[in-house]
Length: 159
Image 1 (cartoon, rainbow, N blue to C red):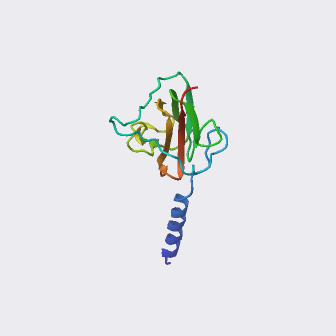
Image 2 (cartoon, rainbow, N blue to C red):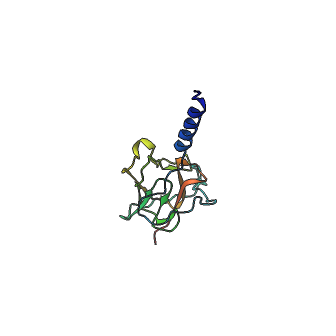
Image 3 (cartoon, helix red, strand yellow):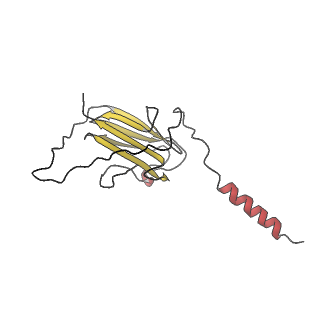
């Protein structure tokens, strides 16, 4: 009996089953946000010099806002993955999904963010945004800088 066709079918079925998409996010945080943010401006600071604009850094204000990292999306208190906060607010990312994630700023010159080895399911990461601007971020494991797990923090001057 020639078993090659049976083995080929079993291998193909195993390969297809192994490539199935992730199941829907299970964290009870509401509807998943859209998969893309569209074009967002990035924060840049001019070089130091006589003509450089003054950068105002605001102290921590005691406010904290949570962003949930689920299996395929970032979920904020707003209906989109874009979060608007006042300068001095701490953003607390919580990995509430089943997968490892990371949180990386699109602007690679910025020093905030957390890598995969420190952001497994159940882990948290926090950063105080103290300079007004727009800070897009993403998870490189489940997307890239433009699509997939993307979000943005819009930091405004305190009222």
